[in-house]
Image (spheres, rainbow, N blue to C red):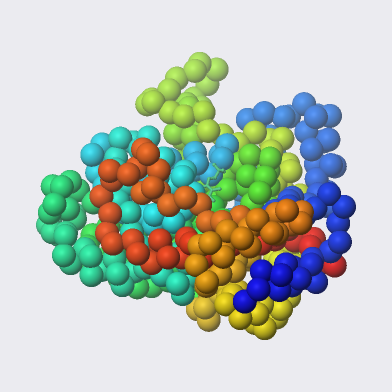
Length: 386
Ligand SMILES: *Cc1c(COP(=O)(O)O)cnc(C)c1O
């Protein structure tokens, strides 16, 4: 493999753009301006307004999930999902070490402890088989749940993360959850528009989280959503994300400690305009992925990551795996970025961060190996119109 061949491939696929090509940029060529201006004109910019309801309804229709609660960001969505699933102080929560830091942080917000799981090459996500073997070694399942024999702590839940938009292999993971009495919350913050076995990601866990940060497939500026098919949990989520206020009359009364996590109408207006275009964005992103796939099949030592046949990915961030070692991978990063084509390595693994290095974990050798190979490629939807 030559690094030059990788750069040439990228130049061939990508449009020739002054000022370089970013990893992921939003695209506002729909009715974004109309809807946002309407909010300003009518002065419905804040936590009440028709766009919040409309955005929630559109998301429910698209994902097939019964209840959607729009919130200020994906981290807030995950935080509330963790709390509602019953994660308590000193519990352990299983998650891949290969994720964005928010997944681990929300567990810490509840004074619980992240417990890191290895990844598999097939999906780049959590490895359900390896998790099962590991739990067989370290966990005891009793009447009320699963306990870590080594730490004595309860293991409450598992959070699969659909990394870069690629769905985790959920069926075997759900079997593991049943076997070990674990709750499952999906971190679907990167996977709006991705399906596992024809059903939308975020429609499998008891609760799930989406994100609409500026770099995600659609954006509300900042934003997120909690998804659930459980009516009672949906009501609870709405209640505690809107300061736990009881809407009885003109008095203000709050019946528990709530959060001010509601998505403002201004952001939801942007979101509605973005969601109208989601099918088109998905089509464009798939076209870009196909172009990358075609060109990288001919380059030795590089594999373009493509979806396994059980899933349909949104290809939020296209990924190649550079097989010749971390030094070669670093050279690829340097060469492409110097050329104005923004590429990125995988996030630093969670167990390597100072605040999480003492957390419990299984053998993480696959995640370590993959993290040294991953290069994320420019993936904005409009790049396929080269
Ligand atoms: C983006 C992201 C989040 C958090 O979303 P924000 O909206 O940025 O708070 C959480 N987990 C993962 C894996 C993400 O990529």
